Length: 92
Figure 1 (cartoon, rainbow, N blue to C red):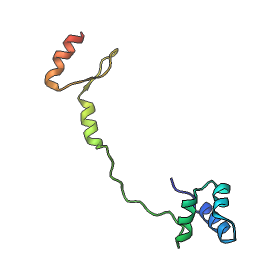
Figure 2: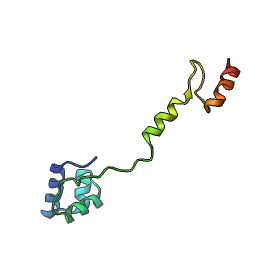
Figure 3: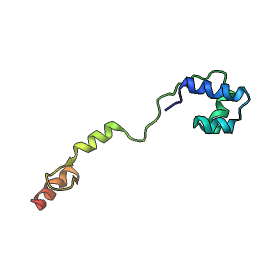
Figure 4: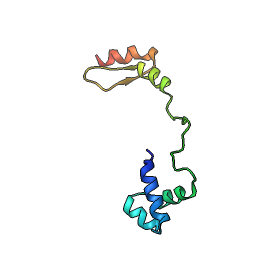
């Protein structure tokens, strides 16, 4: 989550008025590296992010979840459809 524009301006104005970056970091609870990055920028608005590549493929996860057999008082049984019936019979 990004910092608000008001906080960014407040911190940058504090440092530009003669305050130290370390002191601003302590007062406003913002990392020193973040403050240095803000001081280099012309525009303090949050940078728009592109869609990130996710590690999980949600469609594949939904398909895998459909293959999980659940019993009322047992842990989920993960199995291929061809072997599920044999495992279900063993649990009964």
